[in-house]
Image 1 (tube, rainbow, N blue to C red):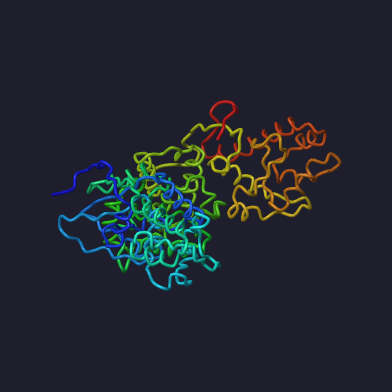
Image 2: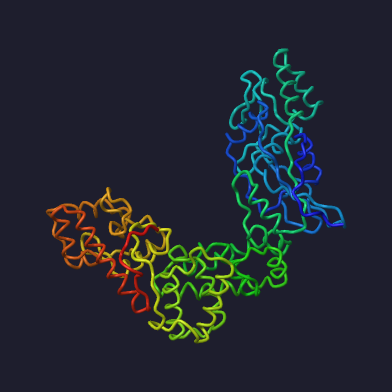
Length: 531
């Protein structure tokens, strides 16, 4: 009998019961959750909340008889049982939300009761799990480099009555003994709410986690596929890291893991934009070698884009353009000059027309079909398909496609420094992105025409050079930064409004000279538009 698709009513559990479930191998933490990242003060604050009787939030678990996920073998620095082999009709319980809290509590309260507690063996991955309660100061503390006092009660005795009694025998102050008993009773009686998702539908469990997750940490599509495909020979997360390391030879090591997975989906014949972890994991298990094809395809994509002036994934106007280009190259590996020109036209047209802005699954599939038709010679003949685009934006936001496109056009002008030396701005833009954007005149903030490409360490030098009315600038220097002679005159006169208005006109002409051969033009006048 399958588990119904539902979110059950919250159950109230004692804290010690939840920790016992982890210890006995009845509650598991899947590896799609991030590792333990809490700081020392966050751990101590959690313990203080329990002491004060303050709720620390509910836990979210998923019960399933069908899925066997890869799980952490240590929680809070303590080894826990491996997940058992499937037993028909017996559900497994995975913790979806609450990893940081339960790791803190399990690693603190369930440390082995032996003499090695005080040793550095309890410092694991730079986390000191030797946590005490100072009975005199009535607060929690870490051992760190301190020598524990007799009044410091190790917290791993709180849930064990015999261990607590043994510790209290060394105390001579009845008040301290009463404080130890009170704290033990508080932790033993502390309750938490457990919310259980009972479903065999993977997507429902994923969606529920994303909506309910109290910490704001989203379980990604890649995380779930990695958990479902993991075995001793195959770890998707490690394979993706391998892909990224191989892409380093073309400076594309920062390619997002979700794009690598989408490229796998495309090769496997699955909708590349749809988060279908179940189907993806099944097909990927059968075809793990496709990651080698993904590497080869993306290397070709990177080389092609570098010919277009786009050196890194961060400079691509829309990230999914890389996935579609990879599919186009896979479809037609004979990458000749004619195909290169077609793909360049496709790249710039889809970027300037903002094809991928707010895209959904249906439109992404249509975009894939279009580019595959293109490599077969069916669509996007340069200058033949006329289309209107939004005018040059008024505000420059580097995260937007239009801002990146304008930056790429400015790079083509070969910006110079104040001594007339051509800056290596293309490389800097690819590696540092928005940090090479100088906003020249402070009161105009992020106005597009107020933005210049400059080496970050030379911002002040460049600003002083341009804003001193006594300076004279060479025509080559001005042109390299899209400054007309009329704009330069306005700048020398201190007329910043006219300077920026004239530079905006120059930027518009710069952009139009690029887009018009593509069959594109502005839709109406140069009106205000925020991006």
